[in-house]
Length: 358
Image (cartoon, rainbow, N blue to C red):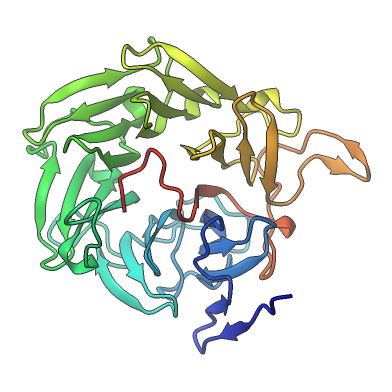
């Protein structure tokens, strides 16, 4: 029987021996101002961020996205807008950083500034998502040779930043006065060198080439609502997170719907769950960041829920009931099963199906 060793660093980072194990779940626990790694059972083995009452640069405020790069963690913090948090901490808290931290919680790279909002050099405005792009796909690549795609939502742009120089090496649109994007929410680099963008408030996902030309558009046959995330699957279909219609939907290359999971069909869901991520796993399941339900779920191809991370919602004794809209959150240092607060992103470590290769 293995012993789980726990190490507590001086900055509050907790590291257990299961750190960075394939099959663990990396969760951006948005309004708890932290990124956590859990076992498949929901036991927290690593975390960065000091919790829902900390609004300093020691936490990642309003974290929207996280990705494991080897033993490093890339994460994007947007802060929290006025009116989101309950008293006494209600108020606007600005972060606007994309950072890479080591397993001890030391920031080794940063783009954007804590508490600063802008569009100039080293400035961001609500960077909701970041994707590491390695120098050579299919080979080990030193992180410093890679780039980071940043979805800079408030500036309606996608920028690609060199890790080594912190210079912007590509951006879309090239003309920042363009209105081609409306509140973009994610960007993934495809094998063909194109970039797949979830253009949220234009109710579409678009594929653009390096010249900035839109070569494909996906709207799920004109039914797509606000599109929060998009990824290209190995079968060449595209998986879309349709926040506006509370569903995850898969479309083929002709934009025909071939699979979907509607979250509000689950009696444990609130009426407006606002899902933010749906990511296909190598076994065919889909992991979903079910934001307003304050949970992460895994569903199979027959749309049955297999796993739930977060405070079990809608359970009073043993009798299921609908939770009240707007708040069913929690916070715990040891397990997800005592609560998450607006989880925005969740990925299975070692399973990058449909995502930019690491």
